[in-house]
Length: 634
Image (cartoon, rainbow, N blue to C red; front, side, top):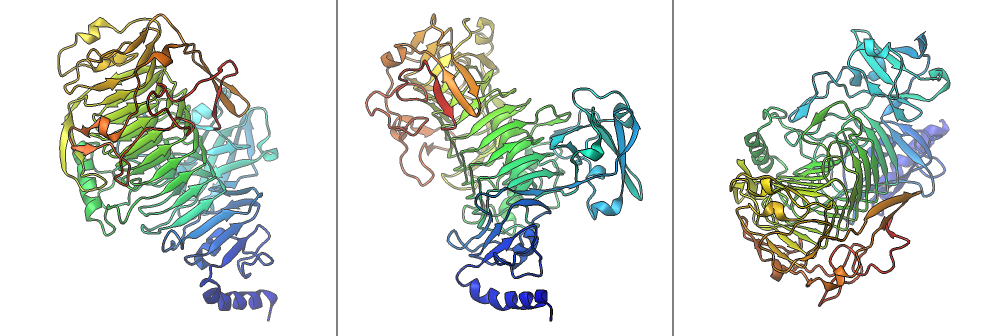
């Protein structure tokens, strides 16, 4: 009997006993799946460890690059008895959806090709897999889920092979053809021989994703995960990310680096069904999607779905979204993530793209994240059913579209203690929001949406209480700082006809034409930012420019500013559930997810605020700002 056979039999005998107390399986590059999975005799693949692991077990993966897709066949049973996948402490562990390609042939100058048998891709070939789906805009040309990487950097897909044959620009190109037998990849390698470099190509649709819903209570911790040929993830379809929860509950995704997903990095989204991608991009189609989610075998309820924790990850260079979630994101916490370079220089477009893009973010907490350099998309997009949602203590900057887009939400939702530093801070096509202790250095865009009826809910529930359009207004703005560009708002926009205006400017004057009035107080407006016309006693410092500037030095971001004495003269008061009242449409309180009363009594850094006269803006006591305020990492 061989040593491997002995180890295999031993492992089979031990598994029923060890899982009673929680077994630990080890995985290492030098391991073997015939081994027992101990530290001394580790397994070789994460997938084999996943097949062995039972609720309560831990899978510890040791240093190296693992080129595989992990499909967990089961989840844990509870918060206390979950299945944990973790990188060994102090070791760099990478899980890649790519494979290395060698043996490139030079065609001319910087143009090379590699020919691969289609068997290389098994059952899924990204170079024959088009990106498509609801609300996707290909901009008149095909796009595939494949990619080519030179030493970790992604080349851009060409529309035609002729484009690859030209001299390479600053963004080198690739193109692929697929016939019945082979896949041929043409690529520009500028100034290098690809046979002497690390060239990788996408071969797997995802990296860590269960093939069926209901795999609950899984922890994924400490990995580098990259290179996934993910499909477009509209809210009407199954949402597959580089790592995703697939209509489950109770996942913890923490301390990972997630990058280079063709579409989405982390997916907390919906299940698939027979109607996927057939809504013809309509609001009515998504209403039907919600109805089917309630009727699904695992229904969309607080007891079954969501409650995920996504914490302390770095998420970057994803084509569609850093984190996406339709319905399955409800009751989750998204905290302390560094999300950047999303949809940066991408040739396609669509309406489902952002640093974070959520539909149905009921009782979701989005706290302490750093979201920046999202190209032509929002930093955070809360689309439909943001109710009981709290966006707090986040840093937004250098986002091309806007920092926060609120689309057809009826509230109540809370936005507090954030730095909004991009050209456009808020796109508000919603109502029933509370904006408290924020710094706004860019424009706020406000408009109604009367062409769509969208859901609202009983408090802390996924049940649909009714559907109605967005008349606009019914927002609360307390204790915020607004900074203008030195010029007042445009009178022509202010005079637009009632019920049809689109207000866009610095400050709150864009809400003057909203149907429902605002509640306001304690706001400070600098450098030409304009107040809401019905606000009593706003503090206007029109002639003062605080010169807010965010500077990066190494991995630190510091805010330079000089607000002067104006902040101390503002008539700010403590913001509470009692002050805010009820959001008009759902008639629901601004309160915590557990139903307890809300009180904005801490600042961006979590420091206590004055109970009697809190400082406007995200930071309670500015102090000496000559050296700048370190805002990331906290």
